[in-house]
Image 1: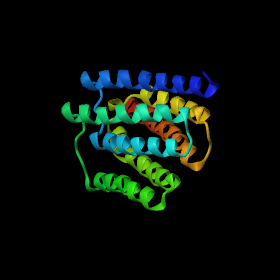
Image 2: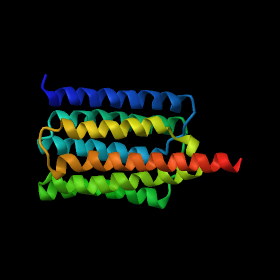
Image 3: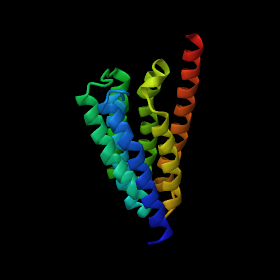
Image 4: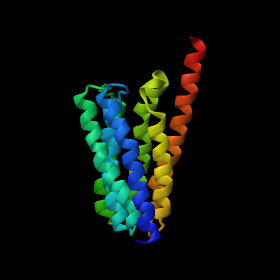
Length: 195
């Protein structure tokens, strides 16, 4: 195995380490993920996986593919468990923007533009979760987003080719996860101080 494949295996292991407790917490109704955030994230992650492969991301893209598949499954599970299924007009805008990246990629024949659009949409997909985490910070898992920040950092190191199309998505998601974690910690402290 090459070092890139080892890093990819570590990133996949971290993906599973993050998702399995998150799925367990959904089933046990300890957390209530926003369904549409997960639909958006799953859709964008799967398309980014394809774009990364086309752009030569190689082993570094594997964890993104695993993540996209599990993310779609979480969206389905969140819907079945009736977690946070409130869908606003803004949520539909995020979803429409995510889906618009596919024809953009097709017509430009350049995965970079799809990744740019998808990264922006994926970051906007954090919107419903940020809104929910602000109001109910205990409804989200710090460990989950922490593991994803680490995982995406390793994904960048595992990439076999570095370009906007391969690096932008995992780097931006790392930053978004860290910012969401800061919000959750801050809001938990504020709510604890108020009680």
